Image (cartoon, rainbow, N blue to C red):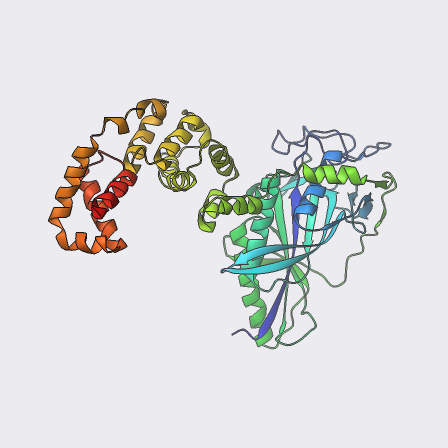
Length: 472
């Protein structure tokens, strides 16, 4: 058991989806050719003035609402002054003192336990240029300068790396399902800073804070925190003092590395942004913006479970937003929820993964897939028949309703019952016990009948006929 209390706070930067940048008309497309999506506003030419991107404000409102935050209708910006090569203006427009969202929370599940992470604030700001460092020079890509950002700051309330990792993953999921951003950590559109301190157990005062900057992977978040806990614990065990410093995570060595020390708090000389007057959002605008929000993964999960999908099954489906949308489209076309879910997670995803395919690669219609599941749900075809037809469906877009139209009508029920009587005659003891409601043996006899009939009739019909025979 550790001798130290671990306290973690997170700062998450999210680039949001808009057509243009936060304060200019330049396209919001960082991935384009470097330094083509730049305006005179982004580059701080003399005499230019910023204008607020309303779509970025909508994104911030929807995300604040999803994180259970109080939304401030009075939008105000501050100027954060500092000089660095990636900041052409010499200052950043942000919401240091008046965040649009405050006092929220997000519940996350860690090891089957629900943990609540309190969120202090969510504020809007603009991103900086992207720096590319080489041995003796640095290149700057100003496509990213001015891209709309929201920063989400938790309270220092997290006590382990698993919760921190799960929280960032839940934030990423929320961003993706709301469609306010793409959540791609590997591309830097979602970045995380970790503040961590250790103190002796029972001590109310927090230990010295160490910051780990710009972590761009969920797994690295956990690894960086675990390493830092171990590093700081060793220093404290040896009677040393933790230095207040900024570090980064080196994925090659799996260690945090010193970037710079902090002796005093940095004074950025904040003051109200003089070129942007405060403005008040109408209550109707906020309500309409929230009402237009896309369905969250957590809400989808609750909806699926009400339909009979298990929590585990829902979690697998919701790992991929496009896959969940495809599943939703199928739900609108069939009532065979159980059969659809099992087939979707089994044969369907298995086919995609085995052949390294995306949904866009499929050439058969959802309608035919849904019809196949309806037939399976009604017991008109067996699972093996549905599986066989599915692999026909991926090659030629056939209508299963036409193919299986006269299937059950062609079955001679008397012939089927006689075949099942022969099965029962081979298992007299099992048949006697099945008549006494031994469900295990009823299942055994059903399986033997299915094997004997070799797909001639669907399993649901076999179970129905077996019940009739046992009651004779």
